[in-house]
Amino acid sequence: MKTLDPVKKVRLGYVGCGFIAQHIHLPNFASLRDCELVALAELRPALGRKVADHYGIKTLVNSHQELIDNPEIDAVAVSADYMVQGEIAADLLAAGKHVFMEKPMAVSMRQAETILAAADKGGGRLMIGYMKRYDPGNLLVRETVRRWRQSGEKGQLLYLRNHGFTGNWTAGRDTTALITTDEPMPPKSREHFAPDWLPPEFVGRYISYLQQYTHNINLARFVLDAAAENVTVKTVDLDADGMTGIVVFDMNGTRVTVESAQTKFHGWDEHTQVYFERGWVHAHSPMLFANPGQPKVEIYEGGDAPYYSYPIPTPIAAWHYKEEAQHFLDALRSGEPFRSPGTDALADVTLLETIYRKHLGL
Ligand SMILES: NC(=O)c1ccc[n+]([C@@H]2O[C@H](COP(=O)([O-])OP(=O)(O)OC[C@H]3O[C@@H](n4cnc5c(N)ncnc54)[C@H](O)[C@@H]3O)[C@@H](O)[C@H]2O)c1
Image (cartoon, rainbow, N blue to C red; front, side, top):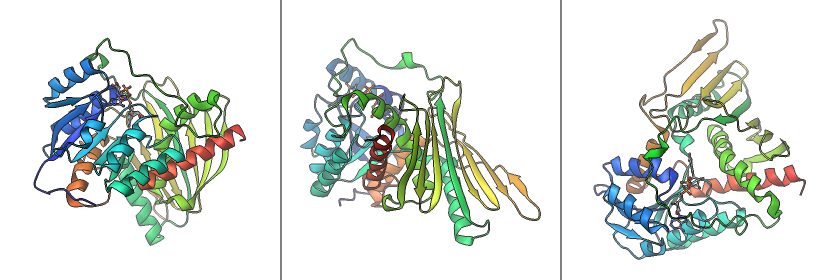
């Protein structure tokens, strides 16, 4: 594994300057002083030109392949289509580049395993954009659960509930500020990388569920420190839309539920509550694009003099996406492990295949 020079800026290439790149990652990386955006790869050349000029990115190329041989690039961030971004990451990792990629890491176990094999071969490190692991509210929940488990002060850990009904995730962001062109979107392959066993007519629904709930499942595993081998899918009860319903897991011996639906709620309806015999900790997640995020956490501590507390998660002005970007740069330069590494994300890909197999009875 190559650790980067701790005093030099990370020279970053970027692949795919669409929605999430322009709203989130390019402005974030451009604003972090440890980072220099040096190259952009984009299949739509006119869009690439406008975005590269806007951010002062000196090298614009069509294909990520052209980033591979550029020795001036230390690492690459990727946000392209769900299906193809894993293939892009694999090529870069095989060539020894470090990669930050948007979730989902892969749309099938087969694709995930190919990506991890590429990283093994090339020596690049892979971090997945699970920004919920960088939300200070979720971090406070995790710390509290760890502390109570270790001390035993609140009795047995009973249950984790993640309610993920979504809603307004862009927090009123001005979408007209996005740089656009008349170029058509590159064709999106919907089937090629999907699991072999999944009938083509279900691929769209599977991707819709996967791309949203990979976050929630990953967060539940993070809060409970549940490694892949300690997680099973017990029950799947989803409607025919393949989206609305509930999935029950066993994570480290604890029952976990993930409730899913896509609503037109004007806010963001996601909260995570972890119950012990004599207490609970409950985080309400902010709208994803709200900056700063300002998550809310309630802690109930039972006993002879029970009380609620509402600690303000710190840092108070944090935004999960920016914390995530800073972590990527820090870990590359310190050698510390990523908080959301690709090796761990394989578990989510595996669980999502299992959920859909059970849902479809296949
Ligand atoms: N974490 C989050 O909150 C969050 C939110 C939105 C999207 N995402 C993820 O980000 C990814 C991208 O989503 P988006 O909404 O930005 O998509 P998008 O379609 O708006 O942008 C993708 C861009 O990549 C370009 N592109 C596609 N294939 C390419 C290739 N081979 N080489 C170079 N450029 C290529 C396209 O031309 C487009 O400009 C998705 O996987 C999605 O899951 C994450």
